[in-house]
Figure 1: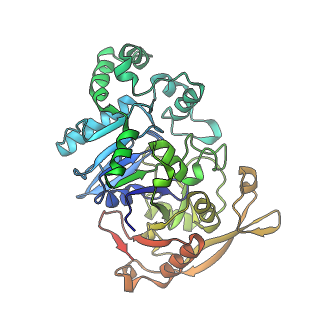
Figure 2: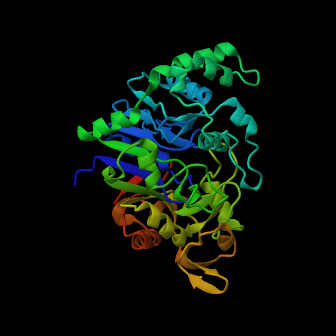
Length: 402
């Protein structure tokens, strides 16, 4: 089957390694389009030995044959985007043109007042990037959108210079970004009719979805496959393939229930070897075993066709590896993921143990350690999706195609 439009969705709580997989897939794409979130996302790419950290621009950035889109479901901090465009120019020498980077005019702005209002969410512990307040104003229908950079620049300038921001800086930002604003949804639909290949790149993960996550410990946007269609403005029936990105263990940043969380030397190993610190905040990530009950739930709302199992190499060196197959809630075993934060906070993990393996056992497909083969089988049986790749290191080439 010819696959024209694909969605790339995090299968856990974010930080699954979506950027690396998106970067690889982007080599075959005409478009890579972000469809939700804002600068609360953090994608780390290792390119030619250099670490590149992105927060707003799509992961296909260095694939110069591919166009980049910021979709209608996003909330965009114009100053942060301006800085990221400038950073890319200083790194690569490429001046991102309006033909290469296209921003949907319906995407909303993150303004200084949103940053001021973002207190971190208390126990939820947000990234403090103004995301929640911006989405809140969007829902109240009082916010400004990207289209206002061209339609109402004076009004945008007043909003951007709130709190003492330099007026010249605000004008420069508006002038730089306004030419990139188009009806991106329309362009994507034209591209689909022309048979061009589109990758819809998600941020965060399915378990942080505003509707389907463990509310209130969630993000402020739709992170699931349905959100990919809505946040890019395309027909949901036109998404041909859904790529689920699943880490070989679980991590979570901030508050919220985490049934498989580890507080022992195994958790310390995952955090240390996996360099589990947030790209956006620098906060240490909580670490735990791969949870198949959580993955089963994520798959049920996202419909994964293909799985990319990332950071398998981080498991190397452990004496044994735990896989959570189900939970015990109120004395009863269940494979069903709890639908509330309260239920998940009571969940006790039922763990299947696998023998560990050494780093030098990871190599060609025929040399995949038995424990990794077992994990692949368990993931495929849980999702009815094929594991297409496994990650064996941070570099772009450190990946095995199965």
